[in-house]
Each structure stands twice: as structure tokens, then as C-alpha cells.
Image (cartoon, rainbow, N blue to C red):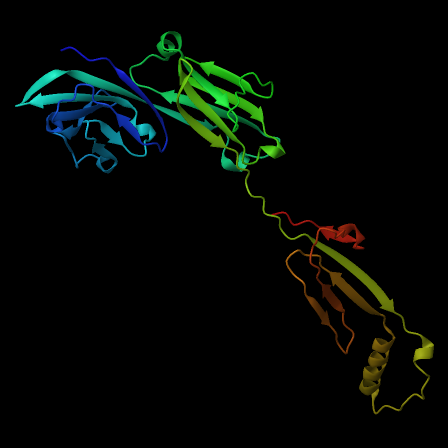
Length: 313
């Protein structure tokens, strides 16, 4: 059985593509579209001009008025060989019209949490193909994988980037060190054939959002209130009914002489502004919590502190 000239269609993720039927008859009810999977299995997608609804991706398939096969939102699973055939009264008419659907995909060597200024990142641009040698594309068809910036300017000779190409796997790698200004920068890998753009796939730099937690500065300040004789005039010693009564009175007097410690706790937080005070009548530790709202002009070094802790978890 003879085969018509092979048609190549290039695509990338999310695109809508049209696969032409080069042996179409006037009536598409005679058209059949088959798909050859990577394990050489043949799957019938269209029969008699009507799509097979029992196929997994049938919702993305349709037949055009010219008998072409339309695929919506192409994915990596779609690349391969599609064949258009015509049948009249059960007999094939004409030759097979194969269409090779190639798929371009860009990925990163780093996870999203690892993408940050100062880190090295490698991008992979791979052309998925089926039964077509990449060396043949490069040598005979003028195929190239070209990296450009978001302005469309080639970075292939820019010393900031290390770019390698493997014709064995049809993949081009771009390695660079990320800068602060690379946030939301887009790098695009283009497939060109004889200097004509066929399709492209992009990678946009997204730095992980760094959550800034409260920074709390704790300051303990203790001061004593000493007992001074002048503050407590001498009084005549009272008479006690018994020794127990006298011991209780002596203990009470000692409490009046002891130093009292006051303690203040200052907290510096970005999310709170509270001021609480605790006071008591007896010998206690006094505590004060003071809050401040961080601003661009705040200088935490102005906080006098003997203990501080940076909570970064």
C-alpha cells in the first residue's frame, strides 16, 4: 500500500491543532482517522466521519468540513502518528495520509520551592516525536530549538546562559543563575524549521512567597525597691498573746522589709499592638507587655534588650 507524503505538525501544551487529511474525498462520511500509540497499537478515533465516543479523549476531537482532525488543548499524550484513510463501500480509496504530531515541552530541574534569587536553574526543552529521527530533522529539515527572552531576542550566545543540545533525545538545556530581577521573567523555547517558527513553549520564573513571621524582642528589666528605715517609722513593740502570735507578726514585718522585684516584658511584633499590665497588692512580680507595629522606619536596634529571639518558623 502506498503512503502519501508525510505531514508534520508541531504543538505545545494547551494549543488547539488541526491535522490535515491530504487524501480527503468530497464526502467526509468516508473518512477514518487512526492513531498509532507508542507501543504500536492502532486506535480508531474517527469512523465514517463520526468520532468514537468510547475513546478517552473524544471530547477534545472533532472533524472539520475538509475532513481534518481537530484536537483541542493538546497534551504530551497526544503526540504520535495520525493516519487519514478513505473508505467507500468498505474498500479503502487512495493512499494513507499520515500526519506526525510533535509536541514541545519545557520543564525545570528545580521544584517551585527551590526557585529563588541566587540559585542555579536548568530548563529542559524537549521535542517529543514518534518514528522520526531528531538527527534527520536537524541535518535534513533544518530543525532548531532556540531559546529567546520575553522580548523575543535570542539568548543562544549570551554568556549568562549555558546552552546544550542533544540530538539523541531532541532536547535543549538552558542553565543560569537566577537574579532578583528575574521574577516573572519568561524564557521561551522555539522550534524553527528552516528559520520558520513552528511552535514554542515558555517557562516563567515564579519565586516562592516568603512568609515573614513576627519578630519578637523580649526585654527583661528588673529593679528593686529597697527597704529604708526612713520609710517605716519605729513603732512601739506590741504585746502578743502567745509565741505563735508573735511569730506571725515577726514574719509579716520581714515581708515588709524584703525587696520587691518589678519585671517588664516588651514584645515587638508586626501583627499586634497590645498593652497589658498586671499589678498586685502583695509581694509579686510585676509584668508589662508592650506591643508595637512594625513600619518601614522602625529600627529594632533602638529597643534596649538583654534577651531577644527571632522567630523564623
